[in-house]
Amino acid sequence: MLKNKLYISTAIPYVNAKPHVGFALEIIQSDVIARYHRSRLKEDVFFLTGTDENSLKNVRAAKKEGIDVKELVDKNAEKFYQLKNTLNLSLNDFIRTTEERHIKGAQKLWLACKKDIYKKSYKGLYCVGCEEFYKKEKLEEGLCPEHKVRPESIEEENYFFKLSKYQDQLKDIIEKDKVRVIPETRKNEVLSFISQGLEDICISRSEERSHGWGIPVPDDSSQRIWVWYDALSNYINALGYGEDKPEFKEWWEKNDNKLHVIGKGILRFHAVYWPGILLSANVPLPNQVFVHGYLTVDGQKMSKSLGNLVDPFELVEKYGTDAVRYFLLREIPSTEDGDFTYEKFEARYNADLANGLGNLMSRIISLAGKINLKSGKIDYDQIKFRQEINNVEEKYNNSLKEFKFNEALTAIWELISFCDQYIEKDRLWEKKEGQENNIISLLYVLSNIASMLKPFLPETSKKIESQIKSGEVYKDKKWAWEFKAEGKTPPLFKRLD
Ligand SMILES: [Zn+2]
Image (cartoon, rainbow, N blue to C red; front, side, top):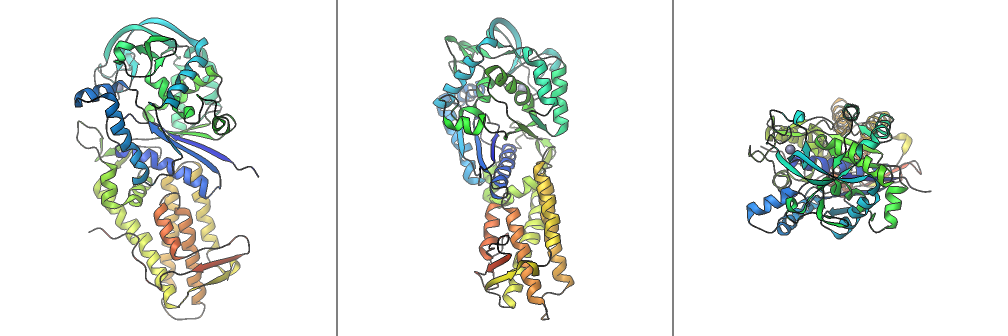
């Protein structure tokens, strides 16, 4: 049977600075989706991230540091790549927009859109932080609403893309969920943006303003491609669009499950500009765009100037990968803004991980040790709590279908409390008839908890499973277990003082 496929990408961050925990949130959310589709839905997954390196910001950041632009982007791209290990990401590819395969693809896409590209002289207000022109009325007290800086006035002859031509088509595509924007509030935002009237977008800048950095416009050495136009094409270039590779056909052209995960600040680029460009180039559209909110720190927007950037590497060093993954997925409502503080982090860690999950596992293993269970099989029908597990699984699957990671985790923790209560209520530590079956049933619940945790806390899930091996439950109606430790296990999470 042909397997279902999922193509999933994160936005590619600028590399003018080190990664912060806000991007960690996005890439961890994406990793959960990728792992869920692989481990639970048994699908083939292609999970992509990368770095956006052709921005003017890099030119400025390098100047500040007194180094070459290439040196700066190499250095910072490496740090983004290190997130793969630090956050335990199941990436299939990592694309840098300074790579040859990307440059080829971006230029090919430009040529594919040629009928919709024209040159004109233009004067506008440009925010380098956003890498885009702003209309006066979109500014807040003359400042960029995203960066709170005054945009620069720029006058030059540039290439434009006829986005206006696709206004009706784009409206239809978003309205009818041909590109489904999640959540609904963000979809409405896109529709309202389109209904204000789409204007053509400037998609190049002069060689001079680019300081020789960026991808050259094909057949015109006086211009470089606008960084967003080039960056968006990474999603297909990684699959070999530029070189007509079979992977592009397989994962993009013939696959109806293509998902972009992005932050709310760049919605327009992904739900309007990108589909517009693809329509022009006659390349299939993505199917879904999932939009997450922003992470604040102590109630404030994270920013370099406030000095409140939280470094994901330091967090992992201190608390471990799975604890960081857990906090971001559990505490932050996936489509809204959420707040990070060390107090909240440690409270969750102690309550949910050390006391909740960790404590339950050691309780169950120690109970099993007392009745001297080593290994064996049990008839599936004899296992209690099937209903509890089914209920939780249903909530878990429904939540994940809607990218509600916090709700999926809440469902798993309901099962954890259920077990704790059951142990108390039936006094499972006492010797009495039927106790063995009770404890085996708890082991079975624990193995289900581990399986559901797999996309979220891959290491922890593996640790639990190494204590109890689950067998061919669904095929021969038996569930097998095997103990490695005899009633003693190292704690999954050590309580923080
Ligand atoms: Zn800006």
